[in-house]
Image (cartoon, rainbow, N blue to C red; front, side, top):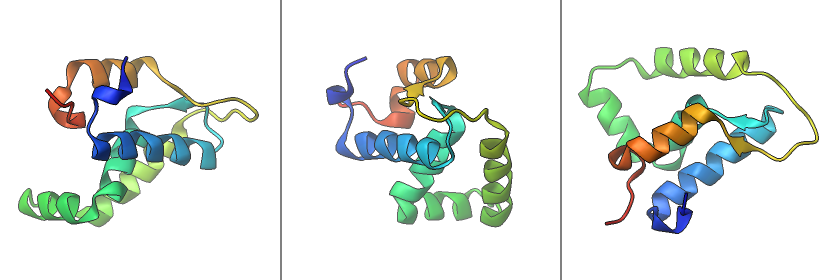
Amino acid sequence: MNFEKFTIKSQEALQKAAEIALARQQQAIEPGHVLKAILEVDENVSDYLIKKLNVNGNILNTKLDEILASYPHATGQQPYLSNGTNTLLQKNDLLIGMQH
């Protein structure tokens, strides 16, 4: 996968996802890490969308933290994209915002 085809914001979100995984001592970057990163990288847009969709942001964050806590832990390893995240990125140009 060529990350240079991703928009700057998408690259920032993926970098943030890796940081979140590392901070939690998790080796695989899972879709939950990517969602958490997207919510943190562009808070204004994501907050607007969450409100527009009538989603309770506190419940979303609580559930997302529970999902992240359920991922396996590993120390001393470089983070990598899990199969689920890799599939997500390859199939969902719109979610990650690949440049055309």
